[in-house]
Length: 437
Ligand code: ATP
Ligand code: MG
Image 1: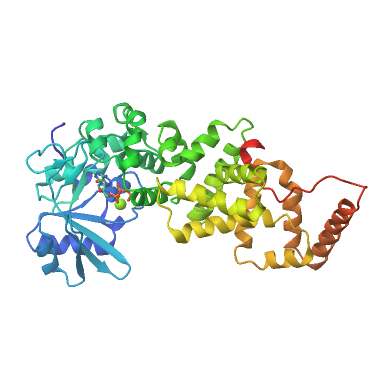
Image 2: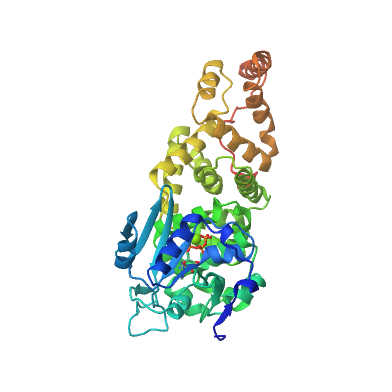
């Protein structure tokens, strides 16, 4: 480890004007009560590279109880390790006591057979607090007493070089907490950093350790990977480092069998449009993106079940159940999310109807707009869906355009229904597997 370094106020760009006034209040009050208090983690890192921090975390030598004495608007949370939350309306400043933990402290840290940390609830010094963090860029401290940045692990230089480097032995650190592999990919995508070679090297081999991580925690982590404006970069990072197959086994399989490239186009299109919407501050739902990521597996399932002679609704429900249950073993999709995913999927086959009454009912469906967007996504990957897109686009236009499109559709259907004239079976209700298109 490099010797600790202190970057004085004039050696770094962080100004108090960029720090949330509430975080400053917390820091000053702790300092005035005689404690040491620092801004730490993502906020310091983000400020150093000119990003606006999402939230401000504080680290201090005061115990949670002492913090509570100082702030009336304070709640203590966490059982394994107590943290103080100081509340200012909707803003919460998290205040954590310096703690030890990790491989440096074998007396106090307990790990299981695979090296995972079981308990790390021991207070420590600021140096110990630094080395138990994940990446050097995340272990910088902005001290309120002299406005300096304190660096115990070389994070200042790494941040300037835009490098993500695990503190300590990478393999050991991943075994302690496999989610750090996802954090590496996520932060590299978010910050546009490169993962330092020794930090990246063990990931493909250790990726399977994520199978035993909590699937609820993995869902949270996926939200941060895909809903924060860098979904495409996250996805490519997961793929490159061999993590995609652990998180989304069926998607990885569909991509392997994707000879036409349709499946890949669908996913990339979904990721890009999610990123674009985040950039434009339009609402995004994780359900929509997950529906796209799991669509190839769902559509293949429906196709197979129809082939076995099941009716459409049965095939759809069974395939959806199977894909969702299977996916939940890795990433726990909450019921409220999977319900939306299924609605989006089931609406896709219903979009094949041209019957006036059914068309009107679909247009009035609360999820129609999302289902239409989903159809656009599928069409970007499968051009044969263009007529369907044109029809539903016309349905949302003014009265005469809508009537004309309905008339056209009826004429076509009538011709097809006329016996002897055109015996082509209409199989449009069958969702086409993207991986085959
Ligand atoms: P973001 O900007 O996305 O919030 P972050 O680095 O702030 O990124 P958080 O999850 O908010 O990420 O974590 C805050 C800090 O806690 C990190 O900067 C890091 O120092 C430490 N930390 C978080 N997760 C881990 C982990 N799994 N192992 C070690 N340290 C961690
Ligand atoms: Mg954070």
